Length: 452
Image 1: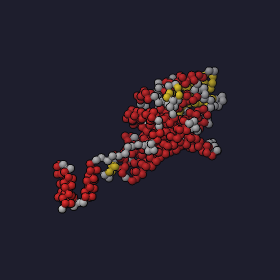
Image 2: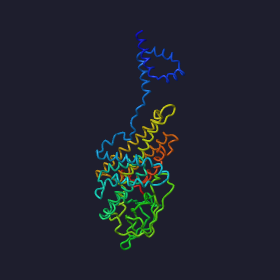
Image 3: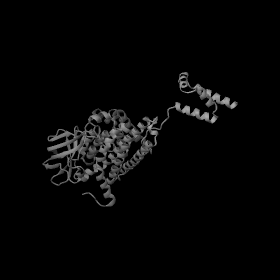
Image 4: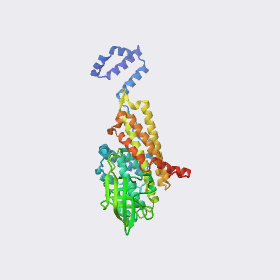
């Protein structure tokens, strides 16, 4: 009798939690008397389980944070570097993410963010002097990832400015050229572009550029075309690589906006990196002074110094693109409901998410070590090429799975993953195709060159 009284008492407490309106609705659906009778027959363990179930149903399930850094690599950063990372993350989330899809769809560049970029003081982050911060290559890579995590186009724009353009001048320019250009480029008072690829010369740039340079007195006369040149339509200075017709060696030149004989046409109808303003450059008897030739760029081996450095950065961009896709997909699957529950609760979806995270974590740890090698002065062409190959391949897989778990919604820009899917294709090809980078690594490990 005491046990029955105790059960009825607990049942009474249970039904007291239901308001009268809810109780009225409930009575229309079930026999409350029968429910009371059933509850009264429960033992203490059964009642406890029922109370626990009802209590949990009232609370929203607390989910783990959405975090692509599964192995906590950020904990290995200094406090200063971590603060800079979070500052750039906030900038990308607040200033770029709300406008990325709009500008990507229109194929236009958001010029309003340039002054805000300058305020971050991160351009040319690894260089010393000339207004540059003089920080680590690891931080540079982390920041590239943070940018690409939100939008790969903006990360590419920044990489051209900070890496290819400033890097060419920093590594290969005279002291006068460094003093003239680097401070303004660092503060985005001047915008740069990097002209290496040509309409008929992509992977074969080391073997022979068709852009010709002929020295005439204290001037160089350049003729030819460049293609896929990011920032070309609005750059103040373009690094032009051309073949010296007299010694057949590659030289670098600082081409200023407005120079006679210079023309640029914006490339339209791209399916990827649509915010990046790529251009086809045509130089017709374009005269450049000897003082505007990069004084330490005398062969393609010198050009390769710049590419080695920036190729490592592209591997980080791939990781950022993959991370953005993974985190977007994870957030979506936790909100999207089918068959009465979030699709993240289904086994097949979890399998996709775990495979995405596995690949993402592998690429993150690889580029983390890559940047450590760079800071230690041990980075080689094959190190950078292996990272470019592996990271861009894995990114392709990650964005594909991210799109898959979203079903039809995966092709809508509003969910961001469609943009990551398209941009991953550009990352896969630029700064050396998968095949060319594979041959660089193959040459290093076998001792035989398979290049033509």
